[in-house]
Image (cartoon, rainbow, N blue to C red; front, side):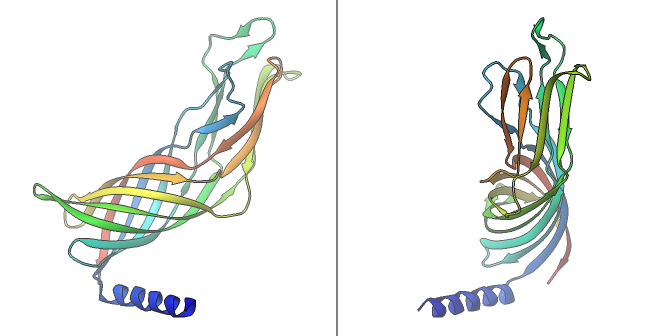
Length: 231
């Protein structure tokens, strides 16, 4: 019974792909998010968790199912950027009024594959498509670390960050897009990965505060696509 269901599903998928009008797109996405999570929650406020910008390249195939429904699949290659920010603290003067020290992380790259289903809506004279779906992401990175202090021998803050493991990370995606012209598409998307891509540790030596860091790829962004061919 299970084998028959798998064969039926495969036949339906092939039929839909064969009958559908396919359109190929390439594009770029700019995202904002990927905030660092720290544990414990650092109640003294020494560690800041700003959002970070990142970018990716997209290759996508979109297939028509009916006049109202479509589905798409594709791949994305990009960078997972995040920021560690820490306030200066020493046992004499306490928290400093100067801006926090910033440690941007640019050393993590990813490759994602996704599948999503879309529904067309007509708003006034413009067609809007809402996609829901998900996929898997794999990461590659260089281990990162940083520190600062009053001197080489007096370190106030230090941290390290590395890839959590080699396992692909599942994610959900929601996208709203519309055509600017017959060839150009613009949209807004939200990505939510369920597991952390990076993990690490931090320590404020004189404040006697330490804990763990983790980063899950969760962001909202703008997508710009160009249709390169149709079949």
